[in-house]
Length: 128
Image 1: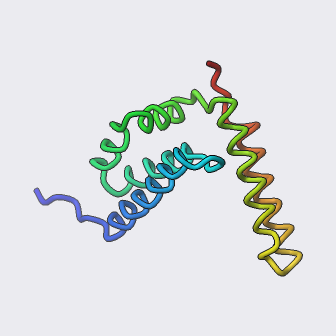
Image 2 (image 1 turned 90 degrees about the vertical axis):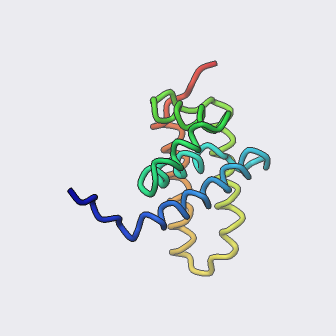
């Protein structure tokens, strides 16, 4: 029996996973940059690219717990929700001056609001 063909896109998923993992680690040390969302996306990318790298990410202390809690539906701590929402608001606010077209600015604000609403209304709040 021949093994299934390897998709040429899988290495791109792995590469994206490493980029997202890097952003996640930056989020752990930089105030105002949430790390959990990047780790969740990195785990999803690794799962599509190479499950070995997903297992590696999930075996990391702290990081693995964050991703497993999210996947299990335990949600985010209230403090993390606040940090994520404020980070989105600041990023949108600072970047508005770089968008010269009003339609683009309005669209960008709506995207930011959608992100904040998703975090506050759809993601469960984990109690300590």
